Structures are given as C-alpha cells and as structure tokens.
Amino acid sequence: MPEPVRKDCPLDKLVRIRRQRIEKSERDCLRARQHWRECRRQLRQQSKGSKDAESRAQQCWKKARKDFFDMSISSGQFKKAKAVFKKMQATAAEMRALAHAAVDESKLARTAYFNAKVNLAEARKQAEKLDLMSEELRRTDVHEG
Image (cartoon, rainbow, N blue to C red; front, side, top):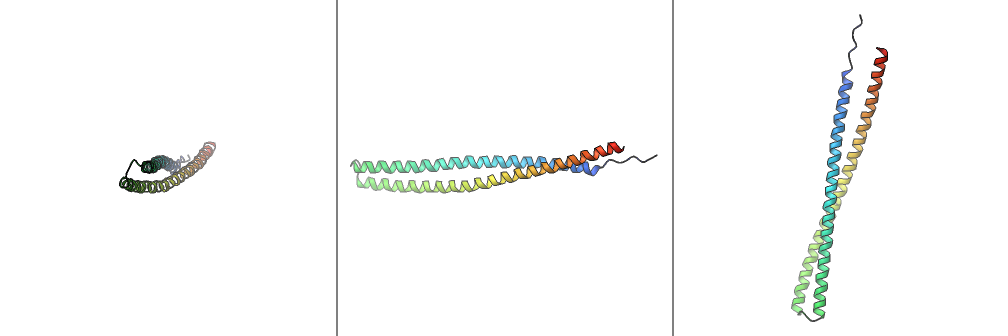
C-alpha cells in the first residue's frame, strides 16, 4: 500500500504571505494617495491665500495713491499707508514662500504615491504568477492521483 502524498504546505504559506503583502501594499497605496490629496488641498489653500494677500496689498496701495493724488489724505497718512503696504507685501511674500514649500511637499507625495502604485502592481503580478503555478501544480497532482 503506497504512502499518502502529503500536501505541499510551503506553497500555501507562500500564497498566504503574498496575499498579506498585497493587502499591505494596498493600504500603503491608499495612505499615500490620501496624503497626496491632502498636500494638494493645502497647496491650493496656500496659493489662494498668497494671491489674495498680494491682491489686498495692491488694492490698499492703489487706494492710498488715489487718495493722496486726490489730496484727500496728508503726506503723513500717505507714508503710514506706504508702511502698511510694505508690511502687507512682506506677509504676501511669506505666504508665497509657504506655497512654494507646499509645491515641493506635494511633488514628494505624488512620487511616493506612484511608487506605492508600482509596488502594488508588482506584488499583484507576483501573486498572480504564484497562483498560476499553484493551480498548475494542483492540476498535475489531480492527474497523477
């Protein structure tokens, strides 16, 4: 009487491990996409804030010049308005610098997302190859048995 052939457990373990890696890669990919979306949202907010601050500074300066040339404000008030304009310009420049930093962060997040996507595709391809090999081994076992 021939001994029963034991099932190949290492292959099943390998399949389970591959599935766990795929699940981890999917979670990493989703996390990276969410982070990229958040970075883009922050970038939009900072860009809009920077443009709004710059626009407010320009409007303030135009009004001060118009009032001065219309002689509705004194030269002292005009100098004060000019100082306020300079402060507003500095604030707008700081906001613009923050927006540029957000661009860099967004680019890094985009790169991380696409790398995670490539890793997920590679893991899925490897798992598919392993599934095909496992299926082929099962078929040969059935035909032999």
